[in-house]
Length: 487
Image 1 (tube, one colour):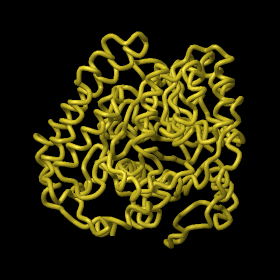
Image 2 (cartoon, rainbow, N blue to C red):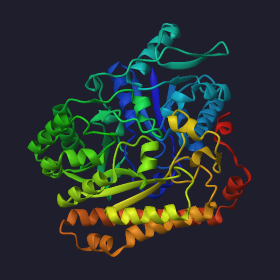
Image 3 (cartoon, rainbow, N blue to C red):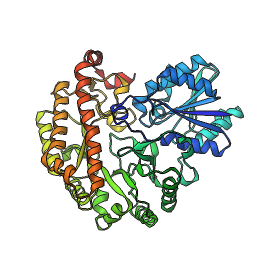
C-alpha cells in the first residue's frame, strides 16, 4: 500500500515571509508509525515551495498513491486550503482515499465531513497509533472498532470512541528519513528541525486549547531525546533544534537530566523554544545549564499587562515573574522574546499605551504581538461567542490578523497601535545597541536575522491592509457574531 503525506502550502505571513521552513513534525511522526508497520510512505511538502494546487495534483497523479494524508500544525487557517486540495485530488482520481488530521479537524470533524464529501476519514487527536489502526480497520472492513476516527459510511457520518493518549512517547519514532532532499533551515539558513521533548500543558489558560488536545503533560526519556539530537547532528548535519513543546520544563527533574545529557555530548548546537516565565525563575540556580546545552532564545508568553485580565483568562503568572525571567535570561546570554496578545476585553487607546509602557519595563530582546484567535473548542470561545468578528476569511485566522471586533477602536487604529508598539520596541536604543554590540557574536547574528524578518512582516502587514481592497471590503461588509460564523 502506497501512502503519500502532504504538507499543504500555508498562506500565513510567517510562513511566506520568513523564507525559511522547518519539517512538518506531525506528518513525520505519523510517517514513522506507518513505515514501521511496513507501509510505503512518501512526503510531499507543498508548503516548502508554496506549490499551486495544480502542481500538487500532478505530483500526486505521478506518485499514484492509494491514500493521501493531509495535515498541518496551524490547522485552523490551513483547513480551507486542505479542503480545496482534497477536492482537486478527488476530481483527478475519484478512487483516491483522503485522510486528514490536526487540531482543527479533531474538533470540527462533523462540519468538515458534512461540507466536504471529498474527505473520507478524519484522525482525531494524536495520530501515531490511530493511523495504523485505521488502515488495519479498512483492510478488515471493521472501522467501527477503530478508536479516534470520524468517517462516512453509506452516506452516514460517524464518530467512534476517542483514542487513548500516547502515554509513552518513546514507543513511536519520527521518520526523519522522509525529509529527503528538502533543505529545511531556520535561524539564518542553518539546517534545522523541529522536535518535542514533551506534549501537553499542565496549565488551563482559557484561550488555549493545548491542554484539551493533548489531554495530559508527558515527556520523553531525556537521554533518548539527547541521543536523537546527536544522531540528527551527525547524520543530517542539523545545527538548530526548535522545540515545539508548550511547556518542556514542566518536570524540573527530567528537564535538568535532559540538559545535562545534551551538554555531555558537546555538540555545539543552537536550541530555541518556548517556556513559561515561572519555570525560568524556578530554575534560576541552574540556568547556566540552559546556555551550556545551546539555548539561544526562549519565547515567553507575557500575553497581557493587566493582572485582572490574566486572572480572567486563567493565565497562571505575574508581572513580577515575567520581568524577572527576562532579566535572568539576559544574565545568562539567552535572548527573550515576549509574545503579547491583543483582543482580550474592550481595549481602548489607553490600553495600548499601558501595554507599551509595560513592555518597555519588561525590556525583552524581541517582541511579537499577536491577536487573540477564539477557537471554538476553548473555554474562551463560550465567553465571547456573542461578540462580532471582522475577519471571516478562515485562512487569516493565523494570529497575525485581527479577528474580534474592537468596539472602541476602528480596525485601522488597532493596526496602527500594534505596528507602533512593534516599531518602538524593536527600534528603541537598547534594542539597537544589543543587536549591534552584544558580546556574543552568535546572538548578534540571531537578532539581525530576526530583525530582517520583522521588517518584511511589518511593511507587508501595512501593504496588505492598505492595498488589498477585496480583503478589506470583505472584512468591512461581514460583521457577524462569532457563534453564528461557525454555524
